[in-house]
Image 1 (cartoon, rainbow, N blue to C red):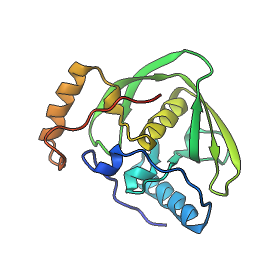
Image 2 (cartoon, rainbow, N blue to C red):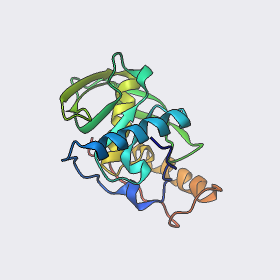
Image 3 (cartoon, helix red, strand yellow):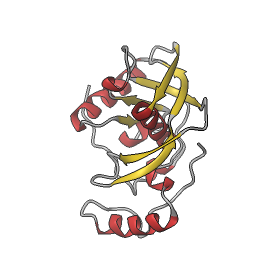
Image 4 (cartoon, rainbow, N blue to C red):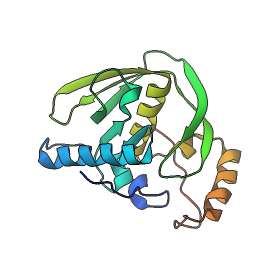
Length: 179
C-alpha cells in the first residue's frame, strides 16, 4: 500500500470518463489498497481512482459512512429510489480549500462489485448518498463544481485561477453530470 499524491483540478485525467474494470486481479486489489491508504491520510469522505491518475471505475469511501465491511465500489451503477433531494456543503480532495453547497439526491442505490468481483449493492442516504454520487461523478469525468449554477461557476473559476496550487488551463472546464 502506498499514499499517492491526489491529482488536482486541471489534470486531464479528472475530466475523462474512466474505463470499466474487467480484471479483478492483484493489481486491482493494490489500487483499492492505495485508494484506502491515501483517503485515510487525507481524512476525506471518498476518493476515486482518477484522482490518483488511474482511469478505472473504482472508488473508496470512508468506512464510518457505511455499516459493515464494505468501503469500496467497482463499476458502480446508480439508481435513485425517489425524487428527494438534499442541499449541503461539499468539498473535494482534487479542489483543496473549496467547499460549496451542492444539490444531490438524498437517496441512492449503488450496484457494483467488490475487489474480488462479487456483486454488491449499497443503499445510501444523506452523507453516504452524497459521497457515492460525488465519487461516481469522478468516474464520469465530472467534478462537484460542475453542479453549481453559472454565476457560482464564474466566481469559482476566478478563485481557482488565483489558487497557489492551480496549474491548469486558463479556464477550467465545466461539464454537465449525467446523473
